[in-house]
Length: 81
Image (cartoon, rainbow, N blue to C red; front, side):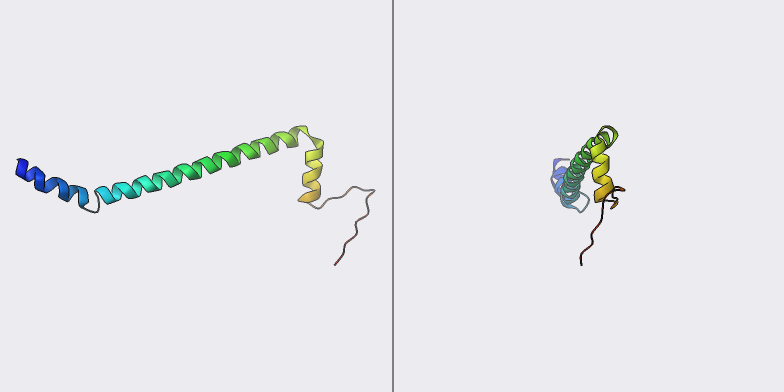
């Protein structure tokens, strides 16, 4: 039984579905964890932005001017080439 174990265990560990697969899965897991952490930071940033848009009229105006190109009725727009 001991001889069989001495032969079978290294074969099972070193085959493609053994230790190399475990290393690959650990690496993939670390990458997924890093991606999740980045997404959590993005979600928190977006929550803060939504809260500002709900409470701060200046934030709404900043978005309207910057992203939508809107101006007030009494403003004059100059465009240069």
